[in-house]
Image (cartoon, rainbow, N blue to C red; front, side, top):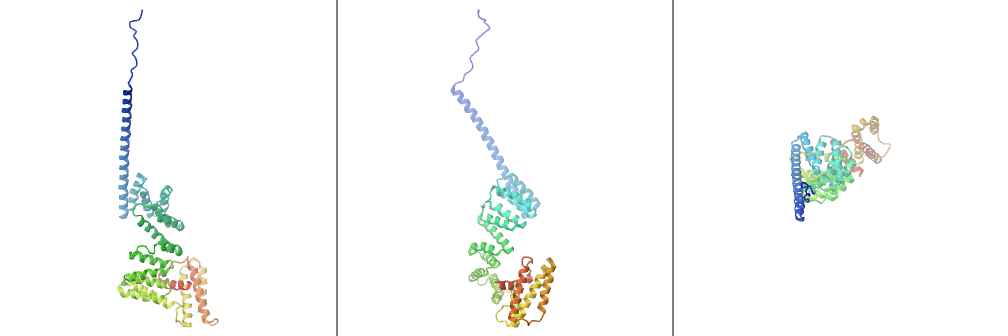
Length: 376
């Protein structure tokens, strides 16, 4: 007899295929909505972070313009931390730190940027500036070249021009004439209507030891504007560098007629007069005057060398005094022509000895021009 309490268990609930698909679809939609919502929130958060970083950067740049460097650094550091995808923030921070004289810190900030992108023009330019401050000139030159040929956001042509002219300035300051000339040749015909740039390039050609090219540029400028006093001064300086001292003086006088109130032109005329007065190789001089000038050239060179060489090495100063005393001795053992040649040769040797050890001085300008001409 069966137990009336005992009953068969009900069958397990079953779902139709359509119900299963509907449930799965709703679940997928819910997950998708959550993902989209999370992504949207993340995007909003990223955009807010980027906006904050951009504002911090803007404030930092503004503070630099107002000479508030420590405050600027804090804002730029915040910008660089918030948005690491903007290398311009880190570059700006490194340059601000460099302005404080912290070259090592600036270098460490730039190294990761360049490891990530070696073609970044801004980072390369900043590194070139750091290395220049550290006195690592050869390395700096390399980074300047990378900046010139690197990638830039915004006005790339202007940024590359800034990098190129900083390199040109460095080469001029360090006396790297051949390298300077190599940088000038590609840009000598650029921007023919930009008078300021043309004059700047012409002046660099003089420093690069190519005054003839400078003269061509200045003559072209004067053809366009015969009343350009600055161009006449530049033309005169190019003539000085070529050893054409009377021609240079005439150019300076032409500039003075156009701008008589310019006191700097009077200084250039005085320089030309000084050079003309001491040059022992000038045409038309008698032998006695050539002898006198050649001896004077040696004495002037000794005086110039004394200013630094005897401080650096007292024994050198004593040797210079010995040379000076020998010049006071009566001549007559050798011919006047031989005396002139020997004096000029001695002056040149003394001048070369001081190169690299003595800094140029304004009162040595005339002497330097004569020595350069003799060495040509």
